[in-house]
Figure 1 (cartoon, rainbow, N blue to C red):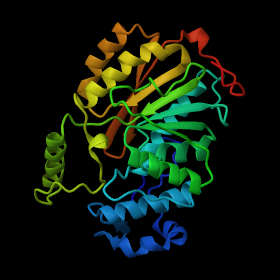
Figure 2 (spheres, rainbow, N blue to C red):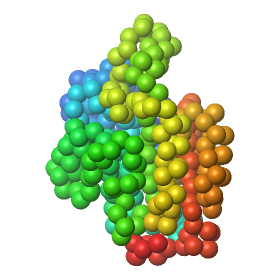
Figure 3 (tube, one colour):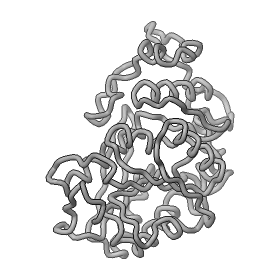
Figure 4 (cartoon, rainbow, N blue to C red):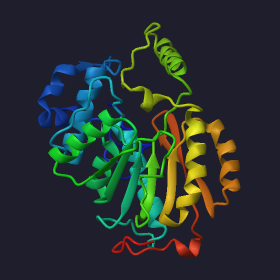
Length: 308
């Protein structure tokens, strides 16, 4: 597969997929290998089973994951793009650490909507050794994430959020401190919109009018009332009460047009700073927003101390 020079410089997947190496670590992947018109090894990315096996091979080969599996039809995130988010967060935290990327378990990250795959904690712990807390409203996702964490000998704290309207309440305790939060929010406003988006994707690929998702996804992973902008708006509103306990709040934003209304909400919340971090991945441009309630002089932290 062709290289992806636009991924983060520290992203292990900048050179594309080394299928021969992946097969050595995960022999089952070989059964899904095809050849593109140039004779190069690839997989059918419209095949959900092939995508899941590729993810397993990537996590095993690059992140020393001994066990990885998720329930059928649950979201199977593309690993290279998800890892990019982690690397850019490391750059963000380095700004308050003398331009040096903070590493080790003293750095605490909160993964909102961690999902069944646990992909952010898996990558973040391997690449930087950070301590992760993951939260999700779906009990099946939490059960899957706990199994992945336990079977890989990791210590990821996992919380089942029982109130879908709360994002930080019931998760961040009075004595908790986090250096960064991260989130891949639900994209659509309703199940109907999610199915419509999937059909549009398949038509654009010339694959008919299917509502089948090659990357999977359950309701809570794909949609929520208000869609992406509604979810992030609630996150911003609720972050005000937890500003002193977190250095940086962040969230992926898939729709560029959502940035303007979100920036207005952040100004209303009187954040100390707000920024947009672009992440170019192949032909697709993604981004996340980051905001903090700490003045610049307050953002310096010693990575040996979890207190902010």
